[in-house]
Amino acid sequence: MTWMNKNMNKDIKIEYVAKSTEFVGIKIMENKVELRVPQVFRKDDTYKKDILLFLKSISIAKTIDKENIRRGSNVIKNIWPFDSYLWIIKDYIENGCYYNREKVYSINNGKIEWKKTIKNTPIYSNGNLIYDKFVTSKMSATNDVIAQIYQLCLKQSIDKIGWLFNYDIHIDVQQLISTKEMIYRIKNELNSTFDDTKRLRFNHLLKILINSEGDNIISKSYSYGIENYYYVYEKMIDSFFDGVEGDEKKKYDPNGYWKLNNKGLDKASSLRPDTILRKDDKTYILDAKMYQYGATHSIRDLPDTQSMQKQITYGDYVYNVLKDKNVRNVFILPYNKELIDFKEDYNAEYYLDENLAYIGYAYVDWRDDEEYLAHDLIHTFLIDFNYLLRRYRYKDNEVIDKLCEEIEGHLEI
Image (cartoon, rainbow, N blue to C red; front, side, top):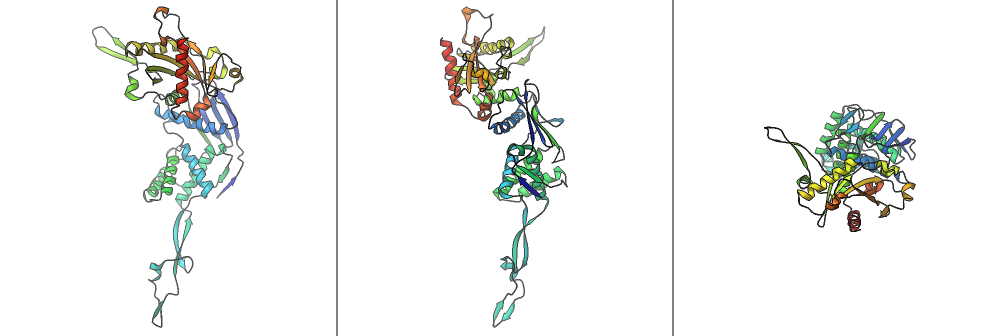
């Protein structure tokens, strides 16, 4: 049995996390939802949409070897299939609970089934054949195991993200078979139908089942998130600024080596820049820094000297080894553009509805002024975090053009 109310009584708490190495994500316990978000996340009138985007961004970690997604007390590589949760909820709201429907036959009550009717013995009258009892059929919903699986997946979807839409859908259902058995049943249904809508539905059910916690589809508590969100932020920046990929990017990695006495050469490790942006005849080395300056406006929360030197090393490598004489260095930090400290910071240069800001540059004092190179300066930009959440999946030419234009303009001063 299911029923739906418009308002969902969930106690939603947002906790802002200061350190990028701490857990961020969601924890759900019965009627309580605890969201742990970066400090730069902005809660505005449409914040629930951005919360969903933030939770979806955690899936980026699946592509990163250094960090796995944490769910419950375990560390595994699967992700919450948010798009499948959304699809199942929408499907229920528009069409009600899904049931397998089977054809039920009766007499004189429904659509006539002529093939079955003519197999009956007719009445002969005046040389005519008369069938006084027609075999008819109707499609009837069956409360079978597939319907039960659908309701279990719907309940899990509502429990996990229903609070985002204020829908309180109550599903009275019990899990009677194992998750493994449910996956097997749904796969069989998927392989036996050519109906596109059914196939889409079964694929979404599979994603929910495969990514469920343990053998229980329904739980009183859920936890989903990641430690070290700065890995995700780095990937978002790389996608947003259309960084070079694969083997092309690897050539920008400086390497260290050991040469021990009477032994061959051994590679120590590689340094890997976050993002390499190529535009016109110039190389921009972008370092995505998930630092707290964008929430605190404190100079103590800007990148330290070690980070500066690392960027200069990247620049030296590209300049001296790859022979690229037009190298630029960039720090990119997330920020909340609506914070009063930034609204009243008249020294920063704001662009594109304040979604991008230039705050200055960093340098070190041991570089000889006579041998000054363009990449000795690390130009520092802020990008609005909520804006990035909404846009990172696609290359943003407007932001790229503005960033490069401002760097070149400052180098000419």
